[in-house]
Length: 317
Image 1: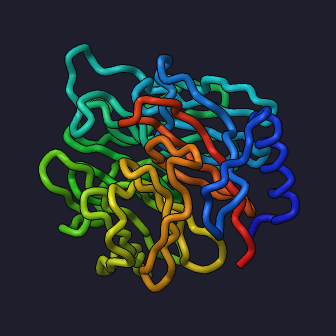
Image 2 (image 1 turned 90 degrees about the vertical axis):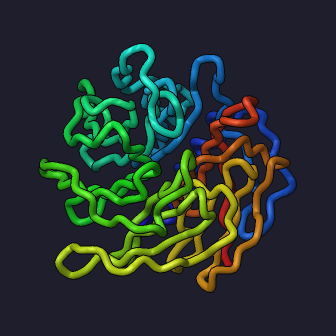
C-alpha cells in the first residue's frame, strides 16, 4: 500500500498546480467529493486521453488516442510529449474506430512505459515499449484485426484486453509473443461494437469490463498462470469503459463513456451514479487512483467539447 499521507499531499499539489481557479463541482455523490478540473485539453490538437497512469512524483502519463501520442502532465502544469507512435499508411481503416488508436499504458519503476496500439495493420498493432528518454519500439505483435485496449502488469506478465476479438492477451515482460490467455463470449461484442475494454488485476484475478454488454467481469489467474472461469460481477453499467478500485475492498468506480457518468459498483454488484456531466465529465474513458484521490480522463469522443482531466477525493467510509 502507498503511504496515504504522502500521496495525498502529492495529489493535492498536482491539482493545485494545474487547476488554477477551477471551482469544485457540486453534483458529486459520496464516496466522491471535491471534484476539480485538473487540466483542459486541446481537442483541435488531438489531445483526447484514452488511458492514464500516475508516476511516483505525481505526474500523470496520458495516452492520446487518435494523435498516437503519449503525454506527461507534470506537477507544475507542463504537458510534454513523451513519444509519438508511427502512423499507418494513409487510407488504413483500423477496426471499430476506423483510425489508429493508442490504448492502455503501464509504467515500470525504472520509467519504462508500455502502451497498446491498434493501427489496423499487422506490422504496427500490438504492445509498444518506450524506454526513458528513448524512442518507441514494438515488442509484441498482435493482428491488425485486434483492438488491444486495457493493460495491466502482474507477476512478470502484461495482460491486455482485446475489444474486437473478445479476448485477453498475455505477454511476458521479459520478451516473447503475445498469446490469447482467455477468449470467451462474455468478453465479446456484437458486430462493430467494443467488447472487452478496461482491465485491472487484483488478488490474482483479471478484472475486465465489456462495453457492449455493460458488464464487469472477474477471471481468476490459476496457480500455473492459466485462466479460471469468467464470473460476472455487475451488469447494467451502460457503455462501461475503464474502472479503478476505491481501496482495500472490491468496490470499484467505473466510467460510462457515452452516458457521461461514473458509477460506484459495490461488492454485491449493486451500483449508483456518483459523477455526471454536471461535474465536468465529457465521455470519461479511464480512471486511476492515488491515495484518496481519483483522476478521471475525459476524451470527448461524442460530445466533441472540452476533453479534460478531472480529480475527485474519495471519502473515508
